[in-house]
Length: 317
Image 1 (cartoon, rainbow, N blue to C red):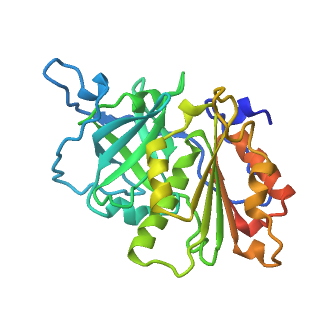
Image 2 (cartoon, rainbow, N blue to C red; image 1 turned 45 degrees about the horizontal axis):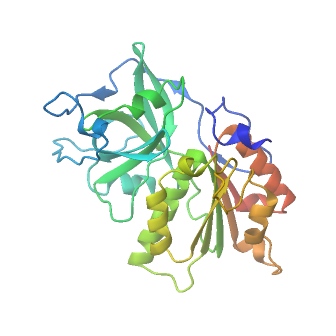
Image 3 (cartoon, rainbow, N blue to C red; image 1 turned 90 degrees about the vertical axis):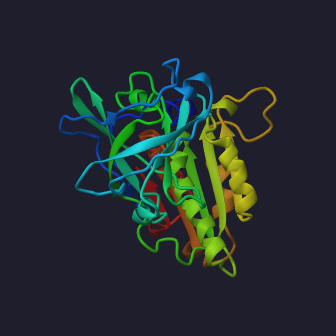
């Protein structure tokens, strides 16, 4: 698979998962008509503060519980908007303290997000991110795609708007990471979001109940160029907080000054972290990935070529 096809374009329709792996996801769908984004908060000149290039945090007192429900939509208010990379925004939402954190369980679970398009809600999955210190906040990383029915509307929401969500859905099987001494995560583009959720949960657990020998975590990210790397400040912060975390960026069309790995994700990038002389290495290894459909197929082939067993692989879809 050529690198320009799998990591950086608008996701294609769902493709059947390759043999020997698990997927956590569902087909994109349409919801019943209804407003998904309500209200706004603009400055005195009629322009939202974030539209002038500023990140804004505003207080908001919720009178009703802001929790995730699988059978019912909840409108979560946007309390902050930040730039997060080329054509990307990081939206922060308010929620009832610990409600969303406990629902997600740090397993890379995603939510349905509904946006009104031509009188009818379009629904797409997004994976929430919850920083280790957050209790009444969660975030969504949104990349704007040309022609994206949901991504363009979600990218343009403003502080004070409400976005309707339900869930959570999918994610790692409960206890799947238990006993792992090495964890390899591979994300293409915004496919990094389930990894953020899992890694932030690891950081939270390390702070509250540190393990005697924490698992070594390798996060390999595929992007087009330096500007396309999502949430760079957060990645740098995580590297300093979680000492066993190794972050590797693989760029397909980097600038002339880039001195890191280039091209598409290959066995050469992954093998050093999954191949071991120890007979028990596969029992201690966990490999997960997330990205567009072509990327999933490519990673399935790589995992097979590297001899990674079926039970050690998980796909986020």
